[in-house]
Image (cartoon, rainbow, N blue to C red):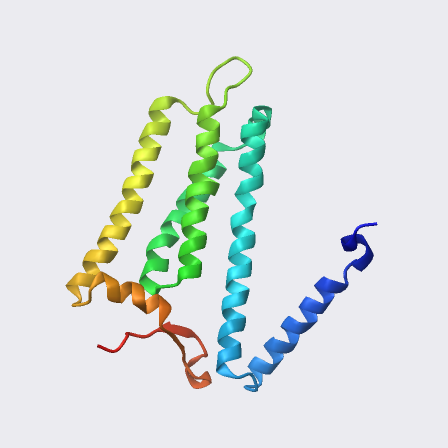
Length: 192
């Protein structure tokens, strides 16, 4: 038997118990801010990495076995791409690296990557699932949108008197606001 089969549900139950304990301690104000911040970042990155793994298996299946493309919905892939792409500006605005990573990965792999597999795949009659004109227009629009979002973010940083470097440094210099203000992570400007 494998180690996973021998351990059963105990590792997951232990992780759930630890998480519940940390949530209770944080709720009661007995968790040091550094631990609360680390717990929040760990939870965020874990969820993001799990989210990021979702399209990988789908794409591997699409490229390895093109017959699986029959069951894919073009509309679902388009909605996944659009929904995640609309979250990129918000992630840039809040300077949330975890959110930005997940949103960018989601719109590129879960959306555009699946569309690419649909474009490269062929039906039984030899026709593509997405025509070259539609895929080219979608690709141009999608990447133009991402470039525009990043450019507008950089221009707004400069217009507000900050350099683009300051905006990126804000990601690395996070501070924890006290419980009286909601206990949320916020970016603080580095001292000059």
